[in-house]
Length: 98
Image 1 (cartoon, helix red, strand yellow):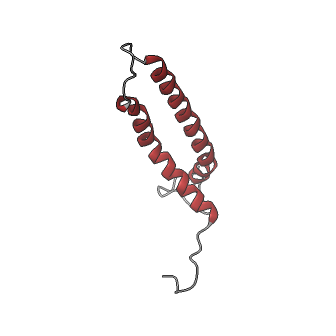
Image 2 (cartoon, rainbow, N blue to C red):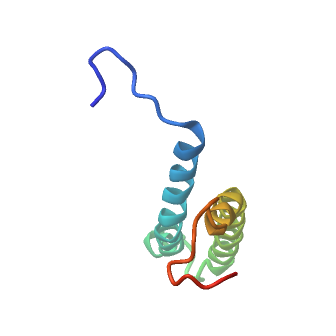
């Protein structure tokens, strides 16, 4: 437990990795909310449906979600690749040679 008056130190790299992982977990929830948002729009004053604006909105959200997922995956890529490498001096629990 940290002592009173002493700031809690968090490693910058692990803190950033955790926030990126949190963002990756919340991205599908954000996507569902943004995609279902047009259902709450008030219809226009004209009797014709306003599908053009809704279609453009849905494609824009779709592209934004793809770009966000790409950015998050790119930020987490080196970290996840490093976790797959065996540690120095670690042995296979079955004792089989590599």
